[in-house]
Image (tube, rainbow, N blue to C red; front, side, top):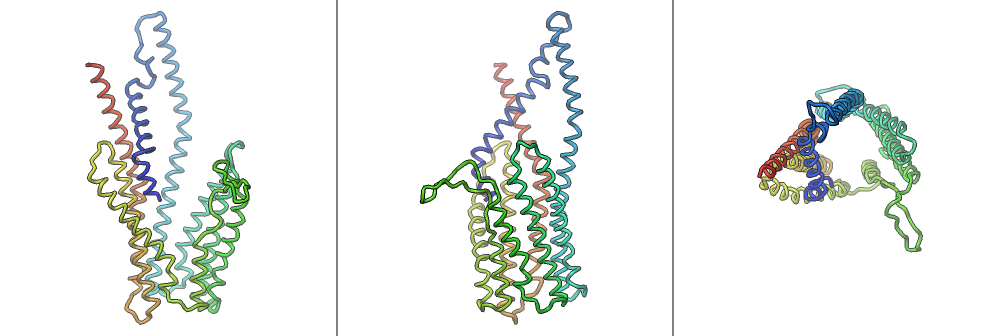
Length: 378
């Protein structure tokens, strides 16, 4: 969805926004920081001297305002840096968990599964901290801004984090032998609670003012943002019932919803790959940042599709044929590699791509300024 939206924006709103930014940068470079008044200075007295003094006062006040706004900008940069560090750390923690799990399954570690799950619980704690911070930011917003839906979204996020952490704790207790006979569908009870709370919170949201729809009875219906159900919850129930032996379908059929998802992603990857070739062959000036952004999204899509498909294929073969020679490494290593590539893409997207986009805008603005100067000389 992100890549399709990016393709549509490339020739539409994205292009208009970039041209607008280029025009604004060109105007700023042409007129100077004080506008046209900065080029009307005069050493003599009279009206022009008065305008020059007023311009000096305005420039001094502008510097004072810039110093006053320096602290909020610094706090915003620190907040952005903390978000980047938190997201990168969560990806590293997932890689650490998969590596520890592989070592535990192969017998290289003899510790309990409660220690294996520690990286995931640390990641859940980071999610809770960032969610509480975002909730506090929503509560500090002006009273006239809509808070209800934003606050419910944050509550939904915290609810999901707590329920997933509780599910991992129950799974660790069963694997460590504390509750060895507990059915898997009981271990998945946090997901049931999450589904019920999600449904209740959805109907607590304020309906959207725009795009009302009429039902077959003629009643005006205003939709609420978001969805009341999460398909992951249904998939968890399906897998839990299969593990407990409630039905005897093969694992290939049990994972059919996931196969459908990866099939769709594969088709989208093929289509986007054709677009990626066109983007590479089309050497438009001052669009290196946009090409890099498109190709980065393409790499993320291919990584998710490839690593997920390899993991699912190896896991299905191992579960349907216990005597097969599929190793634990063949199942888990694709996920480790996939998360490693996603970590590199995230760092590139966050640290390098904004500078590349800004360089394109500055170069385009400078070129536009040179063209305008040449036209004036002619």
